[in-house]
Length: 314
Ligand code: HMG
Ligand code: MG
Image (cartoon, rainbow, N blue to C red):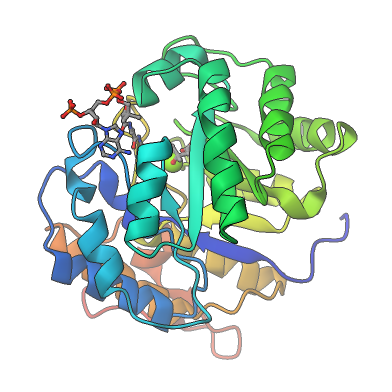
C-alpha cells in the first residue's frame, strides 16, 4: 500500500451543512450546545453557520446570534459560509474570523444554489476574498458538484481543475472539492487529485468534502489519503445535505471517519467517544437515532475485542 499521511485535519461541517437542510427548527441553545460538545471532542475546525439569505436557508437565520454565543477558545476555528459581499459584511459584524465562499463545477447547480453562473460567482468572490484576506481572515473556497451534478449529470474533471485554480488564484487558503450529492467513486478521486496537483494546486491547500449518500464516502477518503490528501470534511452523526441539490442527504459521518483514521494509525486529535456524544445529542434534538455505522456499532477496542462508546440503546 502507498504511504499515507501521518496526520489528518478533520473539518467538521455538522452545525452548517448538517443542519442547513433540516426543516425542524432548532433552538439557538441546542445549536450552541452541539458546537460545545464538538469542540469538547477535540474538533478544532467547526463550520458554524452561514451568512446567506434567511429565505434560502431558514434554519441558519440565527447566524449572528450564534456567533455571539460561541464558546471562546483560541484553539478552535469557526468558519462560516458567505455567498457575497453582503454575507461578508454580516459575518464580519458578527465577529467571524474565517469565511468560506462557495461555487460549483456546474452552472445549473450554481444558478440554483446562489443565483449566479460559476463565472459570475468568481467575479463576485474576487472582492469578497480580497477584503477577507486583507482583514487577516482565514479563507476557504468550495467547488461543489465536482463529481456529478443533480441537474446535468457527468462533470468534466478539467472543469473542476479550472474552477479550483481560479479560486486558488483569488487567494483562498484552502480549496475544498465537494461531492455534493454523493456520487463519487475512488477512481474519480485518484484521477482528480492527480489532475489538481499536476495543475499546480499545492497539496496542503486541498480538502475533500464527501457526502455518503451512496455509501462511498469512506472509500473516497481512502483514495484521497492514498494521494496524500490530509484534510477531510465530515458531519457528526452524518446529518446534512444541500437544499438546492436534490438527493444530497448524508455527509460523511465524523465518527466513521475517526474510526477509520484511528484504525489506520493516522493522528487527528479527535476523541471518538466525544464525537458519539455530540452525534447522539443532535440526533435526539432532531427526534431520531444516530444512523451512521459507528454511531450504531460504537468503536472497537483491539485489546479486548469489545465495542467502545456504545450508547445504552446501541
Ligand atoms: P438571489 O435571490 O439570487 O439574489 O439570492 P439577491 O441579491 O436578489 O438577494 C435576494 C434577497 O436576499 C434580498 O432580500 C437580499 O437582500 C438578500 P430581499 O430584498 O428579497 O428581502 N440577501 C441576503 N440576505 C442575507 N445575507 C446575504 C444576502 N445576500 C442577499 N448574504 C443568494 C442570492 C446568494 C443571497 C441566495 O441564493 C443564497 O443565500 N443562497 C445560499 C444557498 C445556500 O446556502 N446553499 C447551501 C450551501 S452550499 C452547500 O451546501 C454545498 C457545500 O456543502 C459543499 C458540497 O457539498 O459540495 C458547501
Ligand atoms: Mg455539502
